Length: 178
Image 1 (cartoon, rainbow, N blue to C red):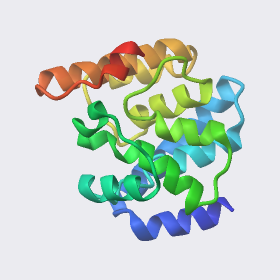
Image 2 (image 1 turned 180 degrees about the vertical axis):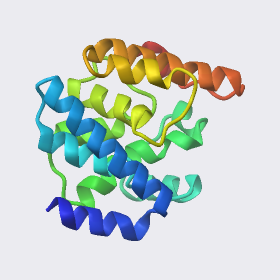
Image 3 (image 1 turned 90 degrees about the vertical axis):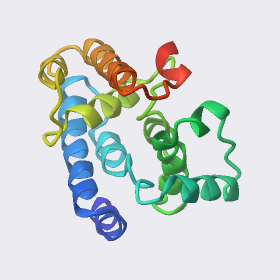
């Protein structure tokens, strides 16, 4: 099953994004083992977290509308995050993922959310710490991800917020609430 998902994903994502997805999957499984979470759920969520990334923002909006997903104004103001809620729908409709924990982790991997599950936190952190990521502070997040999931998650959110602030980008309110 996971091999079929990988084959399909390889066809729609560019090489960089596909390799990133494999890196997130690997990190997510590592963290799931440490923090007592289901490694198969982590494997699928990590692999598919960016399954809608091949879509441009406008295409993603059209697909969201076609699937009846309402995107709030904050999400619409922040086009790079639209792939997350749309990705959850694609994972469900095209990759036949029905597990709500996995779908929530995919949906929440960009802006986070309040009361995130451990799996969602793992995918959020793994997305930032997979081996190809290289930014100031990533080593601190990686180190925390070996022993303290909540600390790693807080550091990852802080890093994401600081990145948006430094580039004068739009800050999604859900990231602040998280």
